[in-house]
Length: 274
Length: 134
Image (cartoon, rainbow over all chains, first blue to last red; front, side):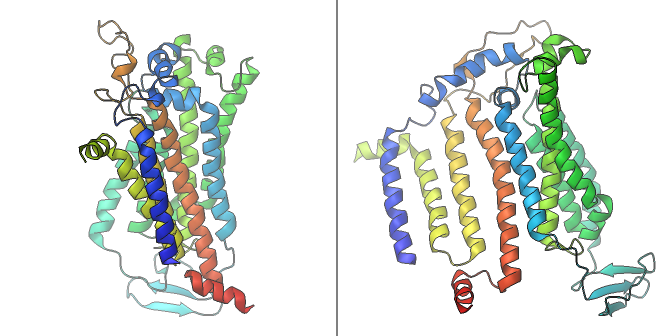
């Protein structure tokens, strides 16, 4: 199997390498990819959409329909992880740690429970005391990561950034919290319900802006028809519509990333993770 | 010989992506462990992403963010030449592809977790053995 795979891979690679002789040179300004549509995007996008970042202009305006369904794919992936893995059955074995003495109690009876508070905390089976350096550094870093994520979402029109990138950065701050403390600390701050609702709300914001544009008499996702609703310069309305769409994308991606991570590391039980 | 060398130098980016892509394809075909197959799939996707981004590059052009788009302080908005900015379209396509690939990778990992919960293994030959036992 390994030899057969190697032969197939070598043959495919040789054919593909042979095919590169027809492809345009590296950095050729007259390559077919940059002759037709991209010239229109580069030369007309600022006049048509008032957005200097062409990537955002193409992403959220010219190809808005495509991006809407990409967001729906991310939402569906979060939903699929939830449906595949979520396990609502409580665990048989539970471990509690007496905080002042550090004694760990092991409960095998499902009915018996300890009240978790300042005296006892519930811990994982292979619990180790978390490191003070890691905890402190992450506690300082996480707010800045989140502020940076919001900046990336909000400045997607003018500088490199946008909803996908900002959402992933925000989601990674949740993951950092779960790694540096533990999964329970994260679940205390962002509940499962919060994440589920937010991943749907993000997609709904995107679709909602499109539907409002339709109600106002334009095409789906035609932001210029939103001008009477927002008291700004009507020339700038497309940039604002894109900002709204990007916020929706950011929320959906942020929540979906957190849902995927939480479900995979805890095998769907949401109690203990990495 | 010099012809071949000049051919490789002009298109060395494609050679790198194809080698990367074939590494990923080999891992997907020949590796026994499901997680290793997933890693191979990710390498394959990375090669395709690099290929797309490289098609957008133009020599001497800058990133597709228009300078002084709204005139700035007393500066008239300059005429925009397409040759000064790289092609934004591959960047848009790959921007969404990266996030979607992360999401689909998450779903694949979730499936692996379910397989492990049921069969206690992620090795393909052992899985096939367990399935044929029934």
